[in-house]
Amino acid sequence: MKPGDLVRLIPEADDEPDRYDGLVGLILWEEDGSHLLVDPDQDVRFFRLMVDGSSCWKMPEDRLEVIDEAR
Image (cartoon, rainbow, N blue to C red; front, side, top):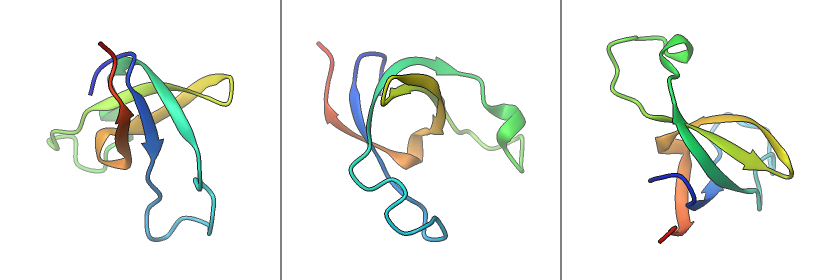
């Protein structure tokens, strides 16, 4: 995954039904998300996304699926 990729947001099992259904976002940049982790030793990449015109989305890589790669 890299900036410019278009991604689909993948819901977790305990998310509200249809919360992320059909949401896609554009990866703006990779961002530090260590403060969001329960275990700071985990190796998890976080990305800042533009979703529905808002750039306040920060998601871990395992919750994203690339649907169109940037060139």
